[in-house]
Image (cartoon, rainbow, N blue to C red; front, side, top):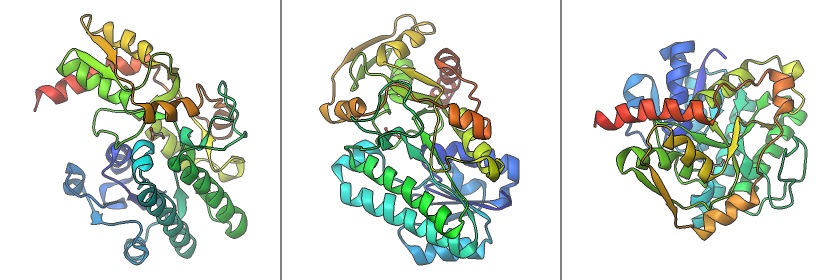
Length: 316
Ligand code: SER
């Protein structure tokens, strides 16, 4: 990667990714773009206001900036997608189609995140294989499977350098996630520090794969820098560094905030989405083909989240 365009750059992943890319590749070589421009990202380096469904503007920015890589993060998450499936389809599928066509036209490498949402109730739940049944029951999941297949198609048919991972729930302190099912595992830290109490919308005993943001950022950079000859499962690799249920994260937080309490007010929509997803993924293909090697387990993540988030909250 030499010159990179990031779409959806002001979202949860983009906010962390931009900082890392700018320090690694140089501020002028990382072009941020998003529909929403009200964040510090806008001031720190090149930024364009861009709706990824606007193919003309998308193409013009990529061409003008002469980018060799597009990291296409613009997307609607699972819970919001169930409320507005047509908006989800427009952004997640038509926006991705634009990213593919522009990458083909300008000969760019393209990173597209897939998700644990690309699996469904028929998928084996434990140690979910890299290649398995993918019959998701959410609009989000359907868009993610479509994305995986489209990215594979453009690679096979046109030789486009598409690469992707199936992200689990991502936990971070810089920016909040925008309406996913795994968001409880971020909100719990904010409420633990601000109120000493959290009401979980995901039920006790519901396991989902998760990962701390620094490991997710490394995934994006490592897979994009990997030797393409080694990548068999391009779109998309299972990645995860932990699998837990709400009581596990509560117990990890209690080690730092002994009076922390949690109760449940389960949201049926997000609970049924969570139940349709795997408990834990097999990540061996990512390890073998491009050296996936996450650093954070649950307790290490909790320690770091509480350290950074308490400073963030205090400084407000
Ligand atoms: N974190 C996403 C969601 O919950 C899953 O990829 O929608």
